[in-house]
Length: 226
Image 1 (spheres, rainbow, N blue to C red):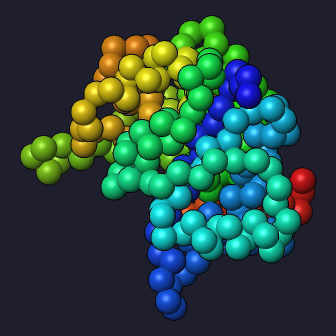
Image 2: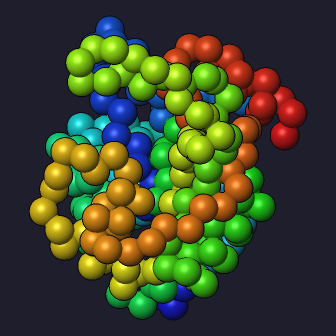
């Protein structure tokens, strides 16, 4: 397989226990599991893209059953998640073929990522080595200081971060040789800690992360619009 691009889709949501909520990546929107919509979004951008799905090992058989039930036939590799997101991405990276030039990491619960956004992130990563989508901060922000006092923060100086975060494979593999640290909040922070600069591209307000019941309701509306 001569893949230029690959995406590691991290679907680490736990909670597949008796009587518990179905993890968000498996909830139905538009009549099909969220994770299937997410994978299809990347194939719409490039049908030859490599797909690596990182799931808790306990979910493997459930996912296989869903794929059968919904006749989901996109080829993808399933890899076991780790203790943290960092470790999950690290595990996913081991399944990315050596010849891949650009590696994206994407949240499994962001099914509405547009082709425009994916294309922009890949293009910027190809040029600059590391690219992440960001959106303006809508809410007012306050900073809680060490002494317990708080103060307003100029929100124009801040951005909210989305996925996919896309990286040159050499940059990415180098960054993931570092030992884990608590302040690794996303892949960009790992790459930055390894000494690389991160380029910002314009995100998308529709590129929501489905984490609450309200998000699921919004997702149904966005599905109907597609």
